[in-house]
Image (cartoon, rainbow, N blue to C red; front, side, top):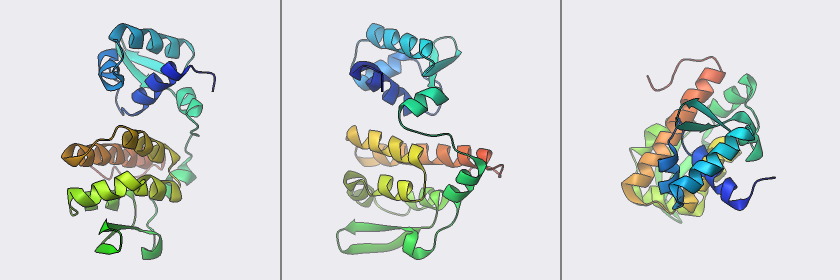
Length: 187
């Protein structure tokens, strides 16, 4: 990577957003002065790591994702990521070590739906251990795994954590469905 630590932090904060975002929001997320963040965002745009789809709004570009270690997802890869898994490769929810909830998710869409069926403590248990990002990586989705890892570093808890995980996973399902030329799983 040829980015400074400060500029990388801004790029990672921007990456967590699925829709274009203002510099003020990235400033709030990183705890950095808005003018400093604005300067870094302008630099990221000049380096082609970010784009401005509308004046004052920023989004990570494909080159920015590559800088974060991510590759473009092909139709075949999207289909593989979205495929249903047998129970042995599905995500099994626990309340704690050795205490299964007998709830499991066979794919990302099912994972989103099961988030509403398990309690916050189970979500926090798995999230703190990195279980979600490991399973998502296991099924082949580097981008969602990276987002979950960045969220985990923020130490979010409770309902806010559940909402953020659900939001990024739902968005990812929509993007994967679009790449795979399938119907939107969340109409």
